[in-house]
Length: 253
Image (tube, rainbow, N blue to C red; front, side, top):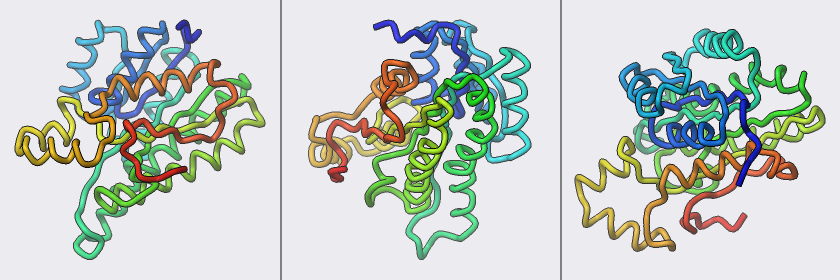
């Protein structure tokens, strides 16, 4: 399917590996111009090489407000505009609520939530000016229900709420905001691969017990949904956060 994304300018936070890398690859296949931002230079270099040098790679600490501003400035200087923003950067920390220092909650929100809010505020004026474009926030099924670490879950829950709030605000200017909530996704740089390597029997039992589809999802399956949501084929999808989880979520909304 031609999603009519040729020459669209896409900025992806956390785009050097895993789901972000798959999203970058998917947009490139559609003919888009892609910029990825991440902290690790080695991963950015590897992504650029594997993607055939077709991406603009920007090294930045995305928990830092000033560096987020610089990322957007560099994309605008290079491409002149931004059409699509994918807020993908994220990570988990801490343990239980009682055992997790408050500082770790702040860190989790800065990375998973405030980076998305700030990037959205920075990019929105360019989309409003054209009265078109899309913002897509990558959250998690655990933003809707218990599971995983509390710092991560709380930040992703906030992101789902933010997605709907900004969507209702921005659609009046022709800008669509949506989200994708992945379930357990297996890719080489992810926690599930590490856990599988450490204890295959335990993780295979987890898949059998917790994922009705009977397997982990792939980063490419998440990327396919993101690319669709960014296109005009999803023109009437506004404020939704779609589960991409093989039936794993226990939530019915």
